[in-house]
Length: 510
Ligand code: ADP
Ligand code: MG
Ligand code: MG
Image 1 (cartoon, rainbow, N blue to C red):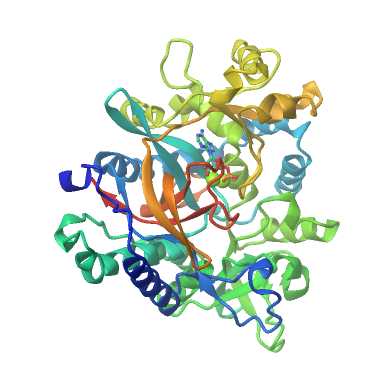
Image 2: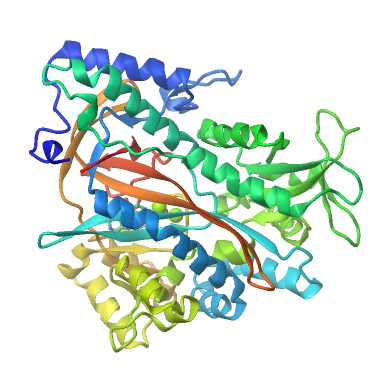
């Protein structure tokens, strides 16, 4: 809306009274509505009883976001779901990329080994579920604004549960608090779209649960969430669980990834995955869907038994969200290959192959920024090596390994420095990506009870859910599933909320 683009929105708050009032309202609303996280021990000391929750960091105002960009990101999600479902079905394509990075990346190599082991024995479950999130920043070229993809997440795409709550918080503030500010913002001035991220993700899990069907052993069926120990972002997951549970009473259990071997068994031959609640061993459930909120990084695999756990999930009859192939489809290397245009300037051969409709491929291609391999043989790789090592050129780039969860990238001048520490033959397990620089914005963040006002950078995520058959390619469910807006201070390179860099936000469309 034009009234938001004049530079006075979001307002910078001057008076202590108005700041305190807004902060207090947010603090109460957040706890009352589960816009919360477990506190870091550094903040409150130990919490041995596990009873403490604090506000998730959040902006005081929904950040202005270009309406056309928001719509583009939502409209393209079904194509992205389809694209990543097809990539997951192409073992040869993924295998060739794994081969390129595995030399310098033991974690990817170990995941691939598990896949090969299960393939040899034969997968029994053909259905595969993706709860995806495609992340973007707004890129400005002359006067034209467009979305550019930061990355595509295929495992443990988080914050869907808190994101819907953040949209509701800002909606509430727009009705109660913003109209009372010294420069009032009338409710009608803000275009706040609804956000169905919790319901959308739960609907994806529900579709897989239904597709699995009843247990041939007459056990009740269930969904398990595989979780990390000491998860601080637990309420995000709980929102999903509770919503899923409310859909035709799906039983949902949280199973620590480290307890998979002790709390589950496999039926010999049919490989049904049975869950035995540790607090009531006389009850048995058959797992229809195993949803991983763990297992995406090496930290979750401290021992060979962790790999055994992953192997058990992968070879079981349960529908995995994700399978190892789908997890690997989320490698930054895949994004790089999709983003590297053909020599004639058209879509990458891989993109054209997976999305044969040229119009659909062109729309996806438009969301890519420049991403380069770092091999020492291709023309693009040789050029990228030069850019990455050049003291000036490197300032335009971020270098990424094949990792998830934030905090793993190297930015700008840290790139040449990092390269000196890695043997040259392993450089290709990283990709080099042009930095996206969104138009400058300001906002105020409420974090740990304190207000931080200043320049911010926003990252939009769009959720997508997809259920498909690995053998036939049939797609049983493909939906756009709401959005996430994360905002960070413009001095910070990383944007993860859980990693402590960013905060929750929602969009005010302009
Ligand atoms: P991860 O899988 O660990 O989340 P990302 O690719 O999302 O890795 O990178 C982490 C963060 O780094 C992003 O949330 C974003 O803030 C920043 N970032 C990554 N790529 C770019 C880019 N091309 N331009 C600007 N910022 C980026
Ligand atoms: Mg990621
Ligand atoms: Mg990310």
